[in-house]
Structures are given as C-alpha cells and as structure tokens.
Length: 249
Image 1 (tube, rainbow, N blue to C red):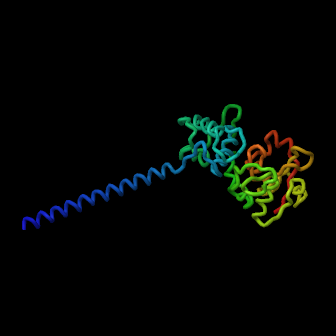
Image 2: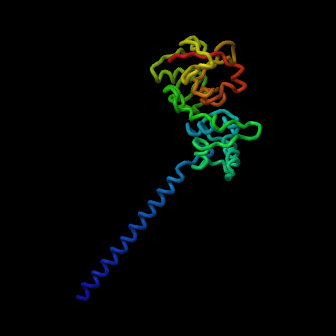
Image 3: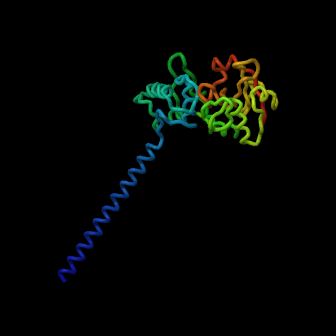
C-alpha cells in the first residue's frame, strides 16, 4: 500500500513538472511572438525594395533626402533617416523601426530641414497606390542594373526596360526611345497619368531617353548611372531635358 502511494505521488509530481514546463514553453512562445511582431518592421543599410523606395520618396518630398529614388537603403538614405529621427527627437541611428516607419508612411510628418520645409499634408502616397498596373510591374524591377542593349531583368537600357514592362501587359513597343516617341498619342505634361511614357533629350537630339510616369511628378526609368530608379521631372537635369509624353495604353 505504501509503495502504491509513493508511485501515485511520483506520477502526480511528474505531471506537475511537465505541466509547469508546458506553461513555460507557451509563455516563451507568446513572448517571442510578441517581440517578433513588435520588431517586424526594421530597415537598415543593405536593405532594398519597394518599401525603401517609398520611404526615399517621402523623405525627398520633405527635404530630408536629396538623391535618386533607387529602392536601395544606402549611406545617403541612412543619413536622411538620421536627420528625420533628430526631428522627432529620436536616437539618430539610421535604422527604421516601427515608430519611424509609421511616422514616415502614415503619421504626421515634421517639416524638413530649414530652407527646405514643405507641408506634411503634401507628402505623396506610396508610388504603388492608385497607380496603373503597368507601374506596379515597373516597380518590381527597381534596382536592376543598367546594361546597354539590355531588355531583360538581368539588365536594362531605357527603352529595353519600357519595352519589357509593357510587354508584360500584352503591348509590344518599338525597341528604341526615338521610335517609341512616335507610338500612342501625345500627352500634355499637366495631364500625365500613371503609365504614360515620358521622353527626354539627353546624349543626342530628339527622344534619346524614356521612362514611365508614376505619379506626383515622378517617373521610373533605367538610368545609365544607377540602373532602374525613380526620378523627378522637376529635378534640374531632367527638367531641362524633358521632351514630351505619349499615352500608349
């Protein structure tokens, strides 16, 4: 009888032990899940993609970022983020956590540095929002390197890029910028819509460079210096070289 009681006591003790262990494991899992959720948003140097491009665009609108929209979190992007963090009185570590991400993309944005202040209400929406499907396709190749004569994701030149993107939507464009400039119908700059082709005179007279209009005065194109990136029509280089636009959709 005594042996039976001892065995029962040991079994109860074992069950209690495993019960405690299960509770601990469940608590640890819940803790780790909560931490993972809290830390789910984090961008730093070396990251790239559409979210980074959107942040660059937002920061540029406010006067913090002054380089091209590449979608690559480089040193210039980190410097802009640090300046933005200082404006929020946060530690300027150049890392975009949940707080900084929400401030840039969804919260009330503070004005940019002195001399470059802009109305936070005028900040643009992410370039993929309310844009034509062709623009969403174009954004998928942000950061693709430039390659003369390239017309595939391994490397694009300007007209090879536009031809490839529009081809994804069943529209075959002529291969070169000057011939693409004759396609579709002309569009006044004040009437530009996402998906319109925008043309520039660069290394030779006439249409020698082409890109795809996104929104808010920006276009995406295959730049010979930085590959597929987003630029502004009002940037000094492009503003003086703007030739016209065509609507092919």
